[in-house]
Length: 276
Image (cartoon, rainbow, N blue to C red; front, side):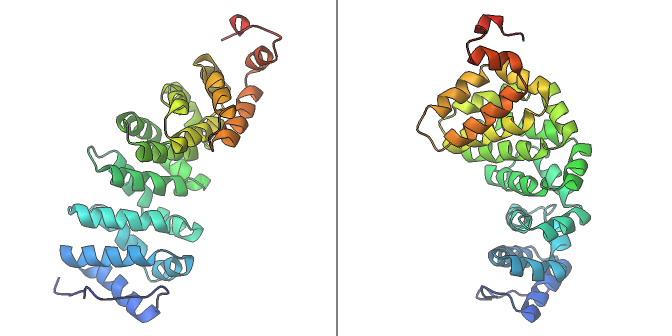
């Protein structure tokens, strides 16, 4: 408390170390909600380049941002989350986020009940970036993230941007074998396959990506076939949408794991002969 952040404070497109250090020190020391809201917004505005993110990380901004994810004020909370999603785009920052218990904070947001769609979307985007490393996926799997993501996806309803973000997070986690197994057990296919018929091209594309990754699990691939996934992918391939190439790649992955479906497509068997 007691600190004042000027509304006209401009750190510039490229951060200078001394004023950036002041901002980070205030971030880690202040308890004033208005000050923290300004600081989180300043950092978000500056987290547009790798160089800025690197300087802010080296000055100690990430633990302070993670702490704000638990702040009672929704503006502070949401702004800090948006900044963390930007930081998570860069490898070195993801390591720092893991060490600051950022994954636990992100899971708590998704598992914490009612949130604004933009908050859930930013949390999902941050998780998708974090999932690029096995270490993060392993931590998230231990935190039971897959059922949380599936529940969030089910609740997302008609919000196409949110559905796409959650689907990307599921795809990111599905690079982990145990996560694919859990997704299969939880009947995640029943949520993902219908998304191939979404009116939203990004949703269709991201659903095809998630299914492609999950098809490394043979039982999941069989479930996709049994639920009409091949027909839906073929419809996308024969359409004019931007998701044609992704659908083609997904179908190829799917058929590698389901020989009976592959033979049916080549007319060696009828669909009535496909073994479930």
